[in-house]
Structures are given as structure tokens and as C-alpha cells.
Image (cartoon, rainbow, N blue to C red):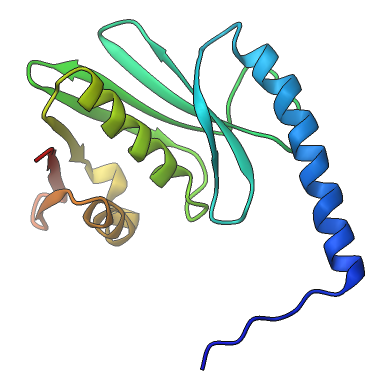
Length: 165
């Protein structure tokens, strides 16, 4: 049976104070961040952290970045996904940042939106030998986001592909 733990007054007050601080920081960070990048939106991580989603896009490369609302923006986000435009696809080059916070899922949602906005039907990428120590996590992540994942265990490499239907 599913039960929900009720929070006491002190826990609720701490949560409210944290949320108020994040909203204040969000205002400040958005103002500063908008000088460096295009602000795409705000989203919440799986740990209830508010994140500002932004991008720098020069028509050849697209970098989607997340900036948290718990610390001051100092010119760099806490997570990023870098992709390049290739013919009829966007090709993911690198994903940088801590795993298992939901940050990659936020970036992937916005990357797919960018692909749709540009009428690009595919998102592709490679799984390289350097990724092999966490390949199971990558397979889970990409399959969760409806990518076809092809892995060659002999060469410790692979590819990913998402097609918008």
C-alpha cells in the first residue's frame, strides 16, 4: 500500500524558506544569464530543485545548459548538453554534469523541442569507449527517452537515434 509521510510544521517552514530563496535566486540568475544565453524556460529536477534552462545556438552547434537556483550564476551552468546540426538530424556530442538528478531528462526534453522547432526529425549520438564504465546507465537513459540504442560490446561503442513521429 502507498503511504505519504506527513510533514510537520518545521519541515514545511524549511521547505517554504528554501522555495522562497530559490525564487529570489531565480530572478537574479535569469537577469544575469539572459546576458549570456537565450533563456528557454524553467523546470524542476527530480529532487525538487528549480533549474533555469538556457541555450547558446549559433546555427551549427546548440548547447543547452541548466543553472540551479540555489547558487549565484557565475557565467557557467551546472549541467549541459552539447549538440551539432547535421543534415536532417541534431547530433549529441556530449552531456556534462552529475548523473541521477533528472538534469539530462530536462535537457533532452528541450533538445527535442528545438529539433521540432527547426523541423529536424532526428536526434542522434554515439556511445564511445570512454562511456563504457557507465554504459548501462546510458542505455537506460536513452531508452527512457524513446531512443533506439545499438551497442557493439566487442568494440565498446554504439549509437543512439530518436525519430520524431
